[in-house]
Amino acid sequence: MAVHEELPADADAAAILQLHSIRESIDNIDAALIHLLAERFKFTQSVGRLKAAHGLPAADPARELMQIDRLRGLAGEAHLDPAFAEKFLNFIIAEVIHHHVKIAGGEPMDATRSAGAAGVAPNAAPRAAS
Ligand SMILES: O=C(O)C(=O)C[C@]1(C(=O)O)C=C[C@@H](O)C=C1
Figure 1 (cartoon, rainbow, N blue to C red):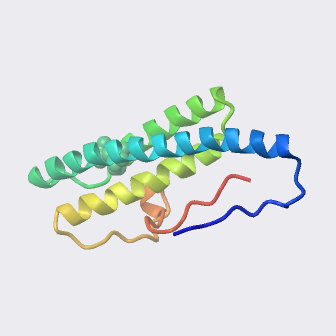
Figure 2 (figure 1 turned 90 degrees about the horizontal axis):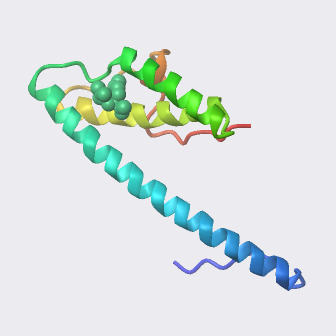
């Protein structure tokens, strides 16, 4: 799919060069995020198989609360909005729980549950922090 940039023809050449250079770093970071997520999902698939084999529940809300607390702290230190970090983690965990339930051969979870990741629809796009 060939998609072309939409930049004004009369844009400052130095600014465009700088934009391209910054975008290279953004692209590298996006690629790293995809690889990190792929690795995380490999591990959580193992957890899902382990849980299914031993009849353990797909979701562990206490573990989720600890992760949220930890990641909110890390986010604050890194000057990232802790609320966004929490939403992002909940979005990922909701997808993981969805996988766990599928591995265990169960029905999809009730996405209307309000607490933690179980209340996040796994296939909905996360909203950016405002
Ligand atoms: O640690 C677990 O028990 C997992 O299943 C992994 C994980 C996660 O993605 O971090 C997912 C679901 C649980 O509710 C808690 C954590």
